[in-house]
Length: 448
Image (cartoon, rainbow, N blue to C red; front, side, top):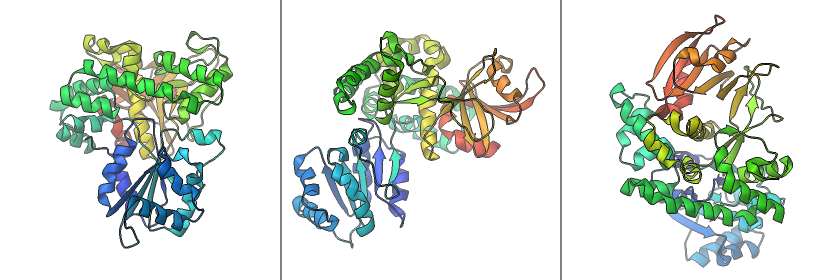
């Protein structure tokens, strides 16, 4: 069993008096059902429905009255539930019964004592049916692949995880944590793969798991796609798109295909809505708010580094290179940094991740990521080497109205340098080891 950190957020949700029905989003096989099963141990009564099963879905066809529906469910499940008991109702695969989605608002209004979580691996299909969750009557959480902290907990390294959470890693543990982070990047965060690795510490045993996950995503394509052509485009993306991970992409003829820009873009957005990837667009400003330039080319970030490594067949590169930045020309590092930052975004109730490009003809400069911290846009580079080699970062910092702090993510130790650009601008550079990525917001709180 992997301890998922999101259970802490679920616990806080369960304690709130103004709690709304919760929609738990996430890709297939990231552990949504297992998480809620574990969370249910905090309740006196747990009622679990899977709307892929006709017997469970039937409850939502008998009436429009939520009290009657709930009573029917309790009788069907032979469960005695009432206001005197702390009760959790989990509606899994809710997209199979769209009527259940609309009824969430009435559960919220008429039975506020009942704790409700809804989830589904194919919530995207509701968009095709022009059905959406009741605005203002539900709230959302997202479950991602396991983070590095969860990897540490799963591999019996809880003390190291706690050091990171407390921002109190002694330099003597640095090399150990960097080695563990490289293993995490190789294995990825899909729960089934992580459990297998934690048990046997043999990466070669993970290939059938990755293949099974990819087969599952391919089997779901017809359920996501709007027509037969889009099925083919999505399958092409799931076969050839992994080679573009962590890179800026062009939609037209993506992956050596003959598909148009529109066809590829629409298919990528379908997969993005299914939480299998994200399209991260650039910003061209250095001043808040961060507004994406949607006419420019985005970066493609996939769900999980472990599946990516398997799909691109670069697993042996991790054994041949001492630094993560040397694996696959640095693309592996950008993928895992984006993957870890996505969890930090969720914690801060944000959906979009950005990078920066210089908006000036005749010059090129690109910073790997930017992070808006309150009213400040902080540039983030993923790179080793001397401070003088951070040319794109210097271009950002030399821009009028730029902040006076930047972040460099690297395999070196944590430190803060005072750096001067060739044009004379002085700024603080936070050198952040890979294992601290998940603490970025808290580290910036201390330094801004």
